[in-house]
Length: 100
Image (cartoon, rainbow, N blue to C red; front, side):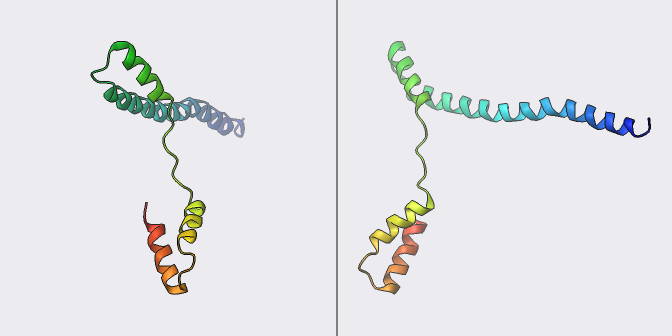
């Protein structure tokens, strides 16, 4: 009985904590959708009802522009430095990688 009680307490705590943990992840996605909706609504100011609905729909479907990966950026910077001396190429590559 003494070994069973701590196991029961831990199980009960885990059962209670799981829904609270899962709700936290939904709040983040809801917040992101809400801010995107506000952004899309701001873009539709002054449009007719039908135009605004269509524009809002397109805006909500749009995905944010992907940041270039560091490997593709490195390849782009290397291409820009072809034909340069080693020291000049290193300096130019460094500045290129720092640029956004």
